[in-house]
Length: 171
Image (cartoon, rainbow, N blue to C red; front, side, top):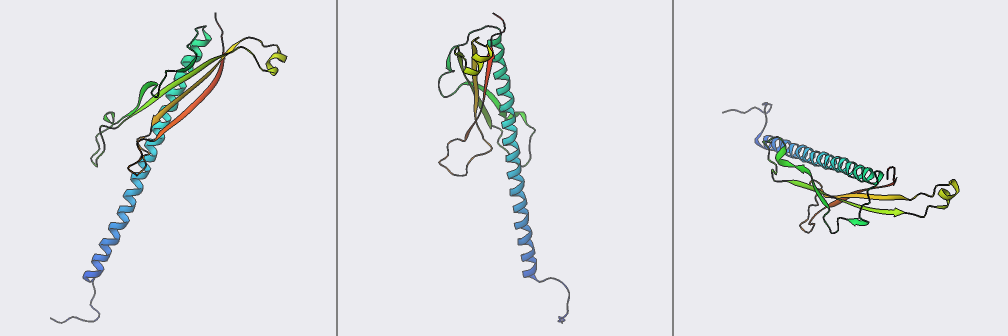
């Protein structure tokens, strides 16, 4: 068989090199997509935590405004407060490329309510001497999408906090 010096086509090495470069590029794209999905889900988890915290804070503001007296100090006591589910993987669509269907992210809501009887100098000058309540609420959650890649990190707990003042409207 006669091969010409100017024969057209690819050699075996060029073909393997093209396949290797394509594989490397597609791996980089897949890694980027996975990272962006995890970042999106982590932000979605934070958004749900904010919504839950707003509702929790408004519930206690309403309770104080209508004249109910809550327990003072940090409530509930301990590491885990009022437990809520922020994310449950079983509620999502079935994915063909894998996923952990047992993944559940819980949030823990806390509050600290104090009666403020002595107003600041500014309030006394303006004539406001009525007591009010200082309401601090916060939520802590384990971000299951923003895990560290080492084996020593047990959990990645994040938190958000609100602080509001509420006067008693009805007695």
